Amino acid sequence: MSMKIRLARGGSNKRPHYSIVAADSRMPRDGRFIEKLGTYNPLLAKDSEDRVRMNMERVQYWLSQGAQPTDRVARFLEAAGVLPKQVRNNPKAGVPGKAMAERAAKKAARAAAAG
Image (cartoon, rainbow, N blue to C red; front, side, top):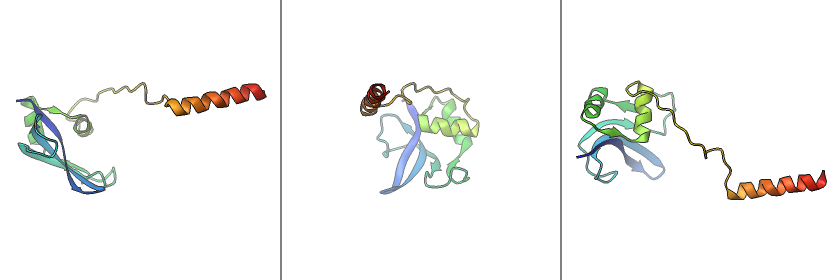
């Protein structure tokens, strides 16, 4: 059974509240889980203590059992010092999309014609 430590969404429309859970990876996002490990409230300020709360003993247990954290939960664990920091690289993050590239090309062509 492949285990994940992931977020399960709760709350109403536009008021999200997440539970950090240990679940079988085949179960739905908000479906059956094995154990609730903590909470995440993205509406609170980033420096608030209540934004992310985790039972670190149980998180350590599930990691030792082979559970894989999702990207977002891994970031929480890195911030808490449980996992080592990973270097992330997204080379396409700063590249403009098609429409913006076309606008830039037109602007460059106008500048070359005028100058």
